[in-house]
Length: 265
Image (cartoon, rainbow, N blue to C red; front, side, top):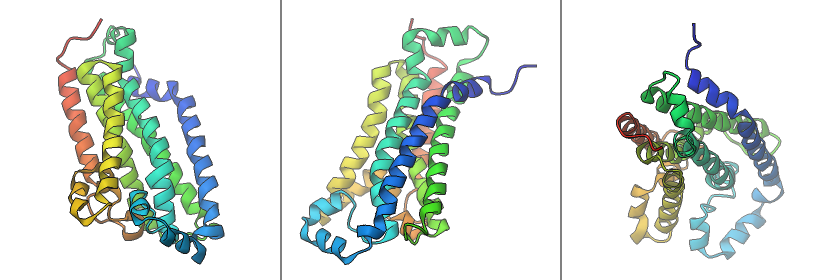
């Protein structure tokens, strides 16, 4: 009897080295940034420095609440370095789920082993999201462990909320790469879609922070859906679930199209 979810298991096994590397990278970022908070983040000098900088710059970087432990963690990790590293990993995994194999001819070999297209798409997409969940879980556990030593003052409930928001945000980029890869079979299109979603969301959020006249842009920014209501401070508020819903819709569309189109030779 064949083991269940063979393609999912193979994707996890084949990609464990890359997953380990990205885990180490996120751990390095966490241990580099968070322990610095007691040194300058919680001091009045940091607020004085922020007050001396242009407010447009501060708001663009989401550093307007960096003087608090939760604001510092969300701005420096979830909103910046963790977002960048997680998105790069997610887009790479999403591009590799379908498009990479189709362009290099490996997808035809996989389909020749008696698996159906929908199964390939679903199991590989599931493997990508399990990897994303792993990165998010590791981040949350480490932040919880550093909460006391780094004097962050983070509550577990809001930490879970921002972790879900983080999964939705980088998961949306992964879903875009998987879906476009399934629809087109082209690595460049899949990679561009995943990266484009991330850049689009961050840019709209930054522009929306510039003035009250541009705040409406937040309504169209996946980055804002995740972080505009500061989930690490406010908890389960706002539209942090919206990214997950849009990601699911993209995957359904990609799955439907992939099942029916011709596979590139």
